[in-house]
Amino acid sequence: MNLKDKIKIILLIVCFLFTSSCATVITSVMPPTTFVKKGDVKLGPVISYDFNIQPIENNIYRVIQIPICEQEQRVFVVQKKQTRGPLAALVELPIFGLGLVDWVVADAVAQNSKKVVDKGYVPTGEFKKCGAPSPAKGIEVVVQFPLSGSEKKLYTDENGNLDLNPLFASYPNSSVNLFVRRGGMTYYLTSIYVP
Picture 1 (cartoon, rainbow, N blue to C red):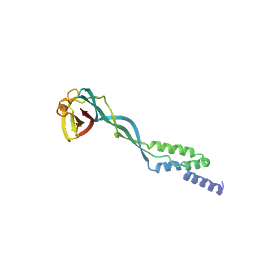
Picture 2 (picture 1 turned 180 degrees about the vertical axis):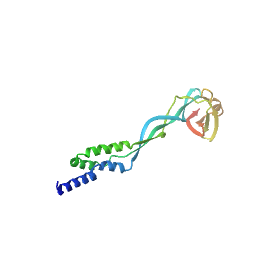
Picture 3 (picture 1 turned 90 degrees about the vertical axis):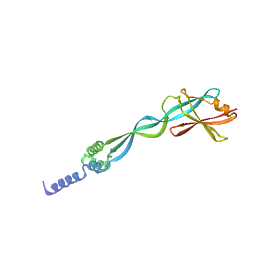
Picture 4 (picture 1 turned 120 degrees about the vertical axis):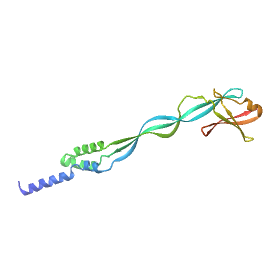
């Protein structure tokens, strides 16, 4: 073996060392990318109520409450390296035939770097009805007289019924607005005109 052949072999080895595993090295040294993955959706606890009113008989109404829940979604934070250097692996393929191995190893490095952190269920900001309607027992109902600006407080009975007969006997030919007050919140129910 002459000196020229030895130099060719040394250059080939140096070239192999500098070009082999480029995709793996680039993938290994690059920082991971972070993204959020969303999981299943569920309804959280009851946070509010929607109210409806139904006429039962002459000036007697039933106040119905419908529970409202905030939708929650499971969230995962995923950190994972991306496979880098596919061009370097393609260059290695015809030269040494190791480009495919480099690409597979780089992909394995990326897959093994995956870290998943479960952040639990977080509110989505969407509100949905989450239960069966039921009579609103013992709820404060504010009766507003728009013309005079006065208000009267009434309460529903154990069946959620609201009797407006005594009120309308005192205020004939009235138009009233009904509101429910619960937990510091006021909910509009309906407007009624009494001839």
